[in-house]
Image 1: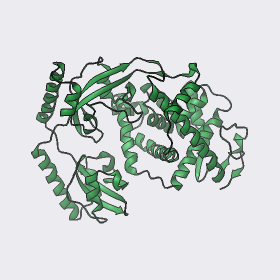
Image 2 (image 1 turned 180 degrees about the vertical axis):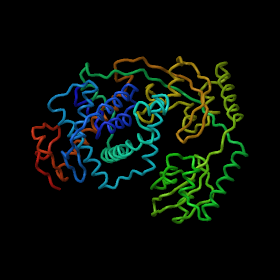
Image 3 (image 1 turned 90 degrees about the vertical axis):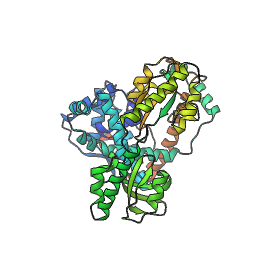
Image 4 (image 1 turned 30 degrees about the vertical axis):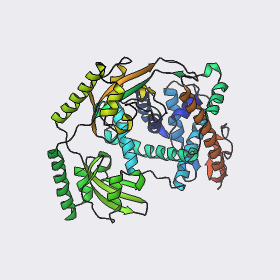
Length: 477
């Protein structure tokens, strides 16, 4: 891999930004994470005299941005040359161009979206290092300090992703285009496919007792009464809400369209006037109090306090016992796993397919092992094809406790990709190439209509895209 390819994968403003970009795009390994943290520590010891080296609209690229990225590539052992800094600068300018246009086009990234993404990333990092304490010790900073450094970079990356999605939203590839793309690849450039699995699951959600639900409702009624009597909803949310991502902002989840919210939440929220507080609202996430902050005809900004009824050990044991009974029946050939999932699984999305899990990110039913969260990675990586796991506890994408068993349906061996077995691999590659062409065309058009100025120290740079103004000269909109 040359320096340009490496940079394209990881480029972001500064070392920490690079760190985030890798994780958001790829399920990177702990080795790569360690390299990035190590590079960050090395760079922190070096003083870089800073200056603005490029201006794109009202966004700036700093000399330190380029130098830190350059030093990180070297720290990772990548080959660099006299044009590497130019490649870094160009990619940073493209990102600033996309952020600038995203803001012009009013692409919205809410604080809540940033915090949700932040929490997901931090959970992944903590799982990789083993604990928050180990992560803090390695980085030399507290979790809060790490989050503060990453927050703006996550927001920028989400703006870039939003802009890119807007540019490429109508792009698709046909089967004939995929075949043509496959035939165009030299044999020695065919990708190597890691082991992939196909699996089915049966999921059981342990039920909360009536007493636990009553307890939560009583707490929320008391909180609502206090808020109506003048106590700050913001303070009450910080203290009481179980939605950690919004609780730190006083329960504020930002602006959302009706269609982006849980249907029951949206119905209650849009019925409120600004400042008003709802009665208790039950959704698939739990029980809420909702305060309307502001709204338009089709969008609303709300705060909420979320509480979830506790699940007793007895209820958890009942879920495990039910799964144990189903597994016993399957192993005795009294029922197939598919039929057991259709009849008894409580995951509505997978049960209709006999519990088969679909990879929405890549399409199809195959999953690489590095796409699993640590709990399920440990389960699946220790199963043989045809084997069913023991019941285990985890959480779903709404934070609800769920117990599962997994049947490992298929495992492919690592191999050089071929069109018959790996059509989706080449479909994804063809789509990426097509998207890159469209994005590059968009960038070249925006270069001509955006104010851009580049420092004359990059006068000898060779850029990959056309239209950039000569160093030291400005391209005016």
